Length: 349
Image (cartoon, rainbow, N blue to C red; front, top):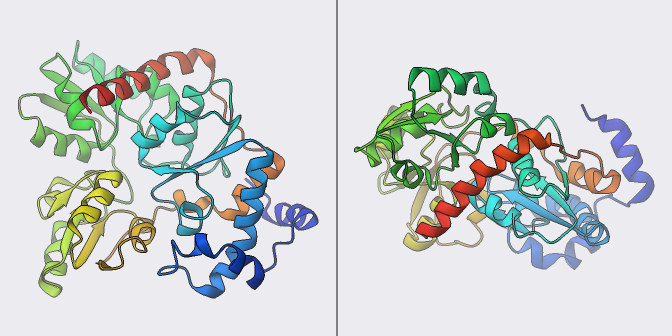
C-alpha cells in the first residue's frame, strides 16, 4: 500500500504543486476539453500536477495509456492514448517509448507488459484491481475444460495473465461476438463475465455458449426496473448500455456497446439527452466534445479505477516505482491469446 504522507512529502520536495492560476491559464487548451465537468477552482488544483507529469514523461521517455473510465483530468490532461481495453491493447503494441504508464487497472498493465516484455510498465497504484478479474483462476478454467471437453476458452481481457495463459483466445466487449463466432467448435466457453456471455449468446445463436459465474461490480448493479422507471420519469432520453450489464438491462437499451462503441454512437447520433449505463467517468470524458448532448441519469463508480490519481501518476513517474512484471513462462502463452484476439479483430475490421 502506498504511504500517502511520505509520497506527498517527497513530491513536495521536488515540485511546486500548490494551486496555481498561472499554471491553470498556461494550460487552458487542456482545460477546454473538460471545462463542462471540471470547475475552474478544481483546475487550479489539477493544473500543477498535469504540467509536472507532462514535463516528466518527456524526460522519462514515457507514454501514458488511459482507459475510458479515468477521471477527466487524467483522460484529457495527461493521456497520450485513450480507449477501451481492445484499443489500449492494440496501441500497446505500437508504443515506441521506453516506459508505459497504465492509467487503468492491474490487468491492463499486465496486458501492456505481456505485449511489451522489454519495456518498463508502471501502474500508479498496485491495488487498482478488478473484481471481475479476481473472480476467475486458472483452476476455474481447468474446471470448465473438464466439464466441456474440446470447447475453446474465450477469455475476457479483464483477467489476470495466468488466466489468459490458460485460455485459447481473449476478447473484449467490443469484439466478443466476433471472436466467439469465429471459433470452429459448436460449444464455446466464455470466462469470466456471465452477463457478457449471455448477451453474446443472443448475438451468436448458432453457438452454444457456456460461461463462468463472474460479474462486474459496476455493471451488475443496474436493473431493468431502474431503466424503465428512469424512462418514465425522463421520456425521450436515449439509454445506452454496456454489455457487462445483465441481459434484461440490455433489453431496455436503445444501444448496447463497449466503451469505444458507446462514444462512437453518441458522437454519431447526437441525442438531445443520453443516459450512459456504465461507469460514471464515461459521460464526463465526452461531454465537452458534445455540448449539444445532455447526459442524465444514474451511473456507478468503479472504486478500482478511481485509485488512479494525478498524484499517484506523478509519483510513479518520479520514483519509477510500481513496475509490473509477468513471469516469462506465463507471459508467452498469455501473449498468444491476446495476439490471436488482436489479429482476428484487425482481419475482420
